[in-house]
Length: 354
Ligand code: IPM
Ligand code: MN
Image 1: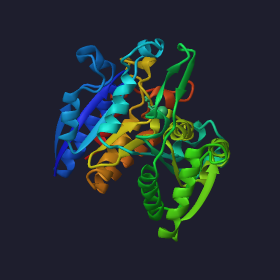
Image 2 (image 1 turned 135 degrees about the vertical axis):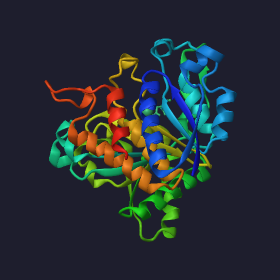
Image 3 (image 1 turned 90 degrees about the horizontal axis):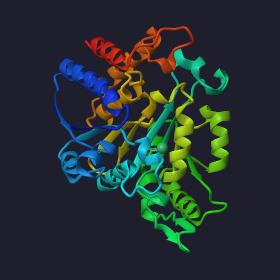
Image 4 (image 1 turned 90 degrees about the vertical axis):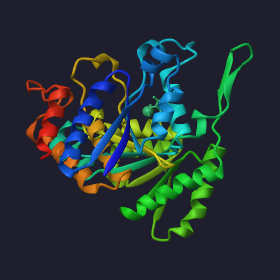
């Protein structure tokens, strides 16, 4: 099969972890007789520096001509500490999500038996955890009206949702639940927010179309608490953009390291695959970042964009092998243990794909 993949390495550790995913994908292509055309493009601070804009039109052109996008990370501390910056790397990510119609962000949290002791939570609380968040990605407070008034002394951001935005996200949630344990949790703040009441009303109205799915409605504050108490009680969760942003960071460390969890953003034809972690500026260029989240994002790409499940499965298998054999970066090494470099983990994974 011919696979056209836009490659957006981005900022910070993005290029380093993307390099490892490329090694792994190339090894997969060789084994299964696929031909990958990598289409590199600029994004984030790197794009601001070279063309003054974090998601340039040329990059968008490359993305829409690809079958899928593999993305590293975006963000740079020099913008974080400057609230007055007019152009910011993160704007590129938001623009890209909007322009590519990526309204559903799929963020799984699962555990690896060999890492169970690395979790900040007790073993008996996390064993068996296998949940997926579907975070709405192109609406809500991220894209609502915002501004300043009263001579700059008052600021506002607005959370707006339409029924159809909620329906299309919830539909994906119900469909995903049907392929799993048929349990769906709608996370909102319907005791306070009108937009949340519209979420709840819309999802309730859809229940009759999926009679086998058992739907629970929970408030976001309670979910934040239960996620650390009983993460294994959840299966598929749907939620709006900002709640999803916060809860998926919380959920991502349950497995033992933030460097492990992949994600997919889908909606229209093109899917985008990226690690949940950010650009980790402190580690940039040191060859120490964990590449597994990006490699697992590539597995999701094979499965979800190309329907290549055997390929995705093999990537997951060699990742499990690297963890079991202790071929891991320093975030996963016990005190006194030996850490591998980012590039060594990538090399190991690629050579195990035979
Ligand atoms: C994420 C990130 C982004 C978000 C930032 C970088 C804009 O935190 O993908 O979760 O808030 O959506
Ligand atoms: Mn986030």
